[in-house]
Structure formats: structure tokens, C-alpha cells
Image 1 (cartoon, rainbow, N blue to C red):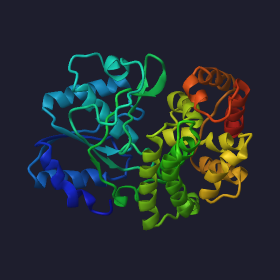
Image 2: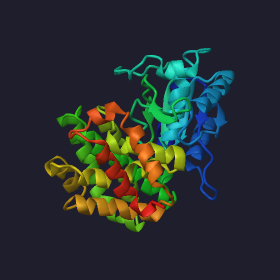
Image 3: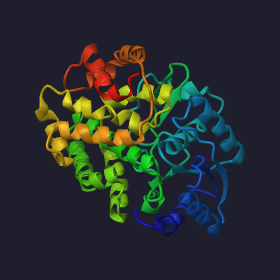
Image 4: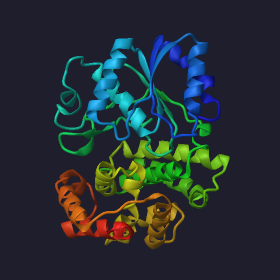
Length: 367
């Protein structure tokens, strides 16, 4: 953790082999991939051969991951370095797992066991290192890898878990990011913390971890909204995303994440924004506000009205889309099929409740 941490700790790579696969994506025009430059220099200095695959797709489809795995197999990859946001890190986890089962159909590898694994140890053989260039997903600390399924037109975490061997958190890698990416990351991390805090499977330990993230968020939320983040804010954002990942790995996400997937899948809305747009109305809708008050207060707001107004303000800066009531009706019907999300919510939710959250959250965008 901290500036220059890749070079400071790069000798760890030597313990895992001499052939690395670097998985990343094309950065936006005029945006440098500082993390890749540091990794490249560190590997060259240590005589480690590497292949660079910069075709990671956002919300990675199973099929694209399978193609990356073939390329990594041909290279004789011994370990992976994922550079980027959740899509790059999740892709590396999934590729690592696929290489354990050569020739097996990818959907069978990812979902054939029928339910999520409860393993406390990584279930792949090849180590993965994560270097986040966004501060939101927490993928560097969780065992999840969320993939897009073409067979069901949705996103779902693969059932086996793959944990990263180590992660490098350097604020240099996010401080040059465009504002929408900083907003999206911070919103994703906030949703992770809030949803896991309310999850019926949570406990005092992971709620306490989430509270650390909420308090960090309170310290930079105003600067985030006004796009005036300081060096300390950037590091605190990375740490917040990391600890929120620690928290939600112990339970999972709930309602806003499930509601956000159609926006990502059909409208190509960035994952963090797609989930968080529903977070304010979700909290406002609780009949027992005492359940959500600890979250709101720790984040630096007086009540859920203030919280929801803040979320809406962030969305207005970055979100440009149009939705119809027919789409909302369909998304509501699809969401009601997700029994596990409804079961993990502390209050029962009806179809009208879910539709109401969709309508109130998306009101500025309904055509």
C-alpha cells in the first residue's frame, strides 16, 4: 500500500515463476496506464518474461474469458498480474480457474457445481496478483469473479472462489482518472458496504469492517462531489474499496446490485453507477429506518433524504440514458425471480416495492 509499492515489493513475483500474463484493458484516450508501466519495469528488471493481453472486456463475458485462457495456456503462464478495475481482476481469476481444467466447457467450470463454493481457500492453481486502477470493486480482496452469462442474459459470480495472492494499492494509479470513473468506483464501494451491512447473513464483525469504509467515505464525500480530491483522499478511497470488499466477501450484495445489472447489460451503464443509482431510494424505502441509520450517520449524513440526494447529485454528473416504463416492468419481473436476493433482505419486498425503487431512482431518465 502506498506510492511506489509495486517496485518496493516486486521481488514477490520471483517466488511464483518466470512467465507472467498481464491482463488489462485499453485505457481511454489520453489516459496513461501508470500501473502497467511500473509492472513492465519491475518484471524487466527481474528477468521475468510476460505476455500482455489488453483485450479485457467490461463486464467480461464467459466466452471472452475462455479466449483469453487459450492464449495464456499457449504462453505457458505461471502467474497472472491483473491491472485495472474489477473486470480485469475478475477476468484473471476466471482465466486462472479455467487453466486448471483444460478442455472442460467454461460454463461447467464456472457454474457446474450448482451453488457458490464456501471454500476459505483459493480454488485455482495459478496465482493471481491484483493492481487496481479504480477504487471501487474490492475484487483484489474478494474471491468472487462476476461474469456475463450469454445463456441467461445476466451477470453472475462464478461459483468457485479465487483469491488474489497479493494486491498493490498505489494512489498514483487512480489520481489521474476521469471524474466519472472516480465517482463510479466510490459508489460501487459504498453500495458494497451498505448492502453487506443490511444482508441477513452479516454479523458484527463484517459490519464493523464496513463501518471503517463508511467513515473513510465521510471524509472524502464532499471532495468527491465537487471533484476536488486530495492525495490523502485518493489513498483513502483505495482503502475504503478494499475494506468494503473484505466486508461483503463475508455475506454478499443484496437489492441494489441485483437491480443494477439490467442497466449494465442493456444500457451499458458503468457497473458502479448502475448499482448505486438505486442505493438512495433503497435505503429511504426501509419501513424501519433504525436499520439503515448507522450507515447514513457513519457516512456523514443526517438522514436517508440527504443520503439519497447526494447519490442523485453524483448520478446527474455522469449518467446519460433513457429508459421506458415497459423496460422497468420487464426488469422488475426479472428481478422478482432472484429469490436469493429477496431472501437476504432484512425486510420483505413485493413486486410493487421493487418497481417503486426503479421508478423513483430512474425518474429523471424515464422517457
